[in-house]
Length: 159
Image 1 (cartoon, rainbow, N blue to C red):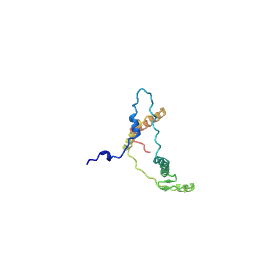
Image 2: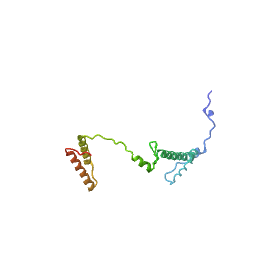
Image 3: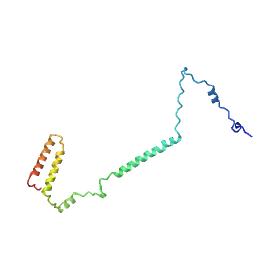
Image 4: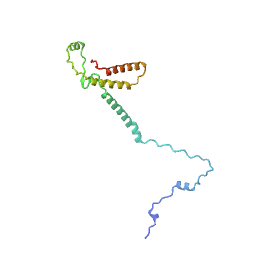
């Protein structure tokens, strides 16, 4: 027994739009009709409204608070330095401590050949600098002349 396929499909009637479209004639190129205006954009969804009205302001405010917190934490207070507090001492106390002599470190004299090498290096660095005006050039020339004298001298004066 063969069952026809039409009996298995639901009873569907053709829509009136389909019949109107099929009966309408194709538009002719001779008529000057303008196309219909585009439909208006759909309104924003409720999810976007919630996002823009609630979440974005919360994120902005939190960002501002975090920025201020980081700024305040990174700024050093003038009364603290390296974890030690600085205490203002009255001037009378400094006068008493100034009288106490502190031991002076005595440094060994630098050998003459090292001093000459140092003067040569300073002279090279002075030659590399470019003076901005005549006064700077004159000062630089005087310094270079003094260095050349020290380099050429048989003995270098001690300070």
